[in-house]
Image (cartoon, rainbow, N blue to C red; front, side):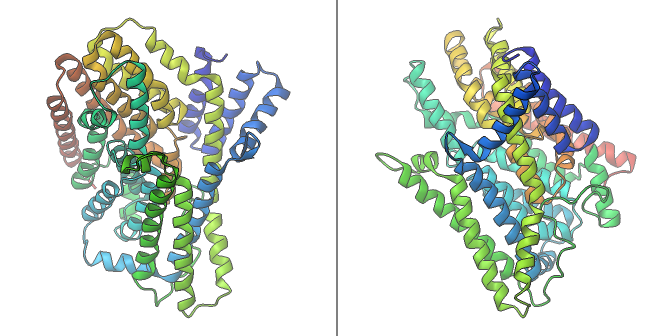
Length: 519
């Protein structure tokens, strides 16, 4: 069933179950089992062996430890420990009280969080987790639901990273472009120049970012988000009380120390940021060959190792502060244990997401979707919008933006080079935009999972509350890409897309006010 329409069934089954049951582990597990049965024509023994193999290869691949995955899982545990220390020391409480005196409105807290999401642009994983740690004490004090915080984090992390040449994403994409241009005999444009020219063509990224600020300013709480925000403001419950304990939530585990100071939160986070960034620079420089530039550094950096180094330094800093407080030193074991335990739900989801991603890869779901497009006879003016849609579906089904880049960018380059070279950069940009859109809609995306973790939100609550906003940004991006294909212009389609976001935002705001339901 590999490479056929049947390869879509496990991904679709998983998505439907997530919507119906809201149980992500059950839904992922069902998708994994059905996918394994499809791979081995319903041979149960072979299917069980396949499931064990994909699980085992998360940790050991080709006879060696899969250090990338192990390091990321290790960083999540370190993040849980750091969060526990920040909570127990009273640093989170002190920071929240300090910020409440300076940012006095819910709108201001949301805008500050959005700005942080744009500032930390070097890596999506780092963005998702760091912004949550910094903003959560403030947003909790202003009774902003964790689902809203997760949306702000997720809808600023990947969109800003995908348009930044100085980022792990930018370096990866520029590296792909270099190979594509050489393979298609394109010599009149350099990969970095092409990436920069593609930035204003990433219509979804700009639409999603603008929508985040409009949601904050106009209180555009629509769909499931309205329920979460209304409950948070009326009852103070930032999470759905009927849901299981979520990653990063330590609200009941510790009583904050009364002597906690702001620097007990700020300094560990600064150490985390500085330690991670410096480690990324050092690992990237060490792995670069020939002339070392900022692009070669980010193209070759070891993000997961850098996160672990930064995490270890941050935990050690928090531990030193803990020793400086008049607290029983025996509490260290409890803090470490509770911090580790609170990250287990995120780790379980991430492992199952990796497993179903491997199953879907074996089923060649992405290759099937790409083949449908590649074999179709279509007008070159429709290339950008169709590449956006196909890339969106592929990222939605496979849960990976980077995998979608790897599959769809070569196809986009080849099709545009043959049919209409003027559509080359718009088509490539549309692939990038579509991959981020699909990434925002799927529960099996690494970035989506880590955004939930960073915010301390229920994962499925985050997916469902973000979906309406992702669809709005995607809808205006489709209009923009139609204009790109018809006019071969850049700025006008971007302005039209952003203008539509503004019009839709104010229209929704007017409707909510007229209904008396504006939060």
